[in-house]
Image (cartoon, rainbow, N blue to C red):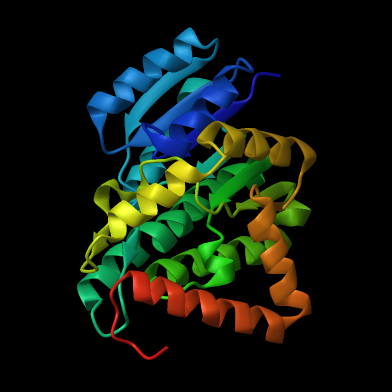
Length: 273
């Protein structure tokens, strides 16, 4: 049976890579995005890759946009099999410097954007008796690095929501995957908000150094849905650090404190952390 997939933020970065991964399998892929020009271009790429591409404008800050897409896809394809809540933004800064406006901005997109996606499509999945949510979180939500307060909290919220829904929806035939990549090559910093000098350049360097690509993460996501795995942790080193945090918290705390001093020194912070 041909899979029917909806991806938020599907016109660029990881969202585009996931869309192309499914298209190569012959899937019907709808990408929702706020950038029509990029969206239409990716729609053509999906068709050329062997799938059926379909672009719709979707702002994850509006529940009505999700509901409109859901009803549209039911009419067009008869339902949806996989919903990838991928759209997200980044921010960085110390607690005293990050504005409440920036907190509200990132939580509205990164957390409530995922909540809206799950809320809109859960009734359809229950009616179908099947469906999968793929929620894009981050290792930032598990490792909680310094100077990333609002971003860490937003991604930890996605993890908490995903774990909750995995239990809540399982008996309805609904699977949940939670994706927690570390740095990989993507366009996350394009709209990044931060008052820290040089933060975007430093993050971009870390992403460029990574041996993990968006296509690698997309492959892991495709396998997780197929194998019904909850955790998707593409980076080996960070996965080991997370295991250390769980099983040897004091050792992890010491390592994180050393990393915090190094990182904050690089950022020019005057903190005595």
